[in-house]
Image 1 (tube, rainbow, N blue to C red):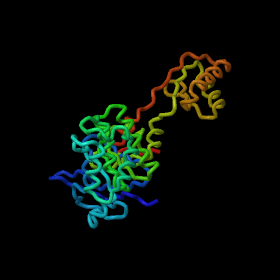
Image 2 (image 1 turned 90 degrees about the vertical axis):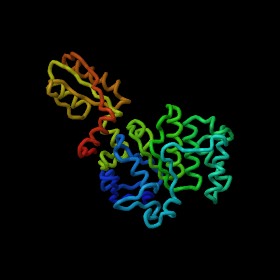
Image 3 (image 1 turned 45 degrees about the horizontal axis):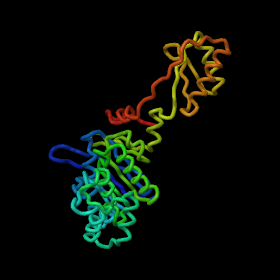
Image 4 (image 1 turned 90 degrees about the horizontal axis):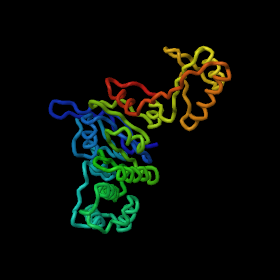
Length: 315
């Protein structure tokens, strides 16, 4: 599969400070790629380089096969972007704003305006003045404007900032549909791990200007133990309890340092599996004192590990 965005050994210094150091990764059509890191990690600087607002010091950025440094206009012809909040003429309707932008860009037919309005779900409000729009509606209008010219790459910097939960969900659905149904490569930066979990197919984690890792979102979720529930059993005979549970569930169970038994079940089967484990222990003549649920690691904990020091390997 050909990469829509390809970044190779990109570094950027502002003043005496190196903001980005030797960044390399690729994004593909049909995926939402999340660029994740704490505030000040270098996300916005990278995005400004990709959209042509800053020059790179070393390295190479290619958009749809076009070198950003050598063929600037051709590269940007394949790019749509929202950096910070989109700006519009508030006294004009959403439709007239899109029409103005289409006229300035050229080559955009009115049928395409209607198409992108449907894509972002603004059919019922597009003739109203933008001054009446909520922040979420303005963000969706911004996406419509950014994709009018059918770009292969859409880049957004912290697009959910300031949105209420409903606005976040609406925008998330728009971006996922653009990637999965329209084949656009969507790159989104954020410091919100929970939002990346719901929106992205892959995530690149950056800290202190260094790309620590790139993972499918499923790997991060798996590392956090989401989708599973772990229980701790306190019994009078841990060795025998471990033996019968290992046999019953076809997995190795050993007493932990406290002489208790840890057993993990898929979340959807947790209650029935827990009842079965209790019954097996009791029918085996083992006294069961207590059962407690162990709290899963949060996805944010995995994120902190990856952004601390050199990060840890996952998977």
